[in-house]
Amino acid sequence: MNTYLIGVKKYFGGEYTFKVNAENKTDALIEARSSNAFIFCRDNVNDSTMRVVKKMNNGRKRGIKK
Image 1: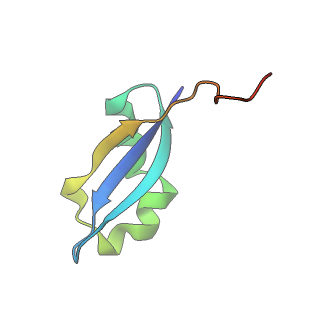
Image 2: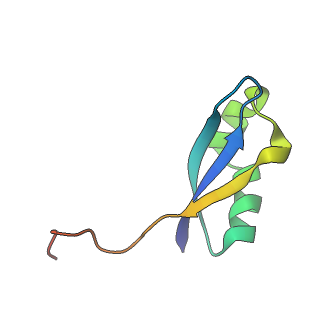
């Protein structure tokens, strides 16, 4: 499972971003359409501008030992 950062442009400038867990980019966009974060902001954004901004790094952080 990977974490993707999803971006949706607002009507009056700016961009709303949120994170989604999915297997790949296609599944991330499908999951984003039904996520609570998107439903919460739906009135102020243009639905057709949804995109995957980037794949978040799920790896180990530098300097932290396990």
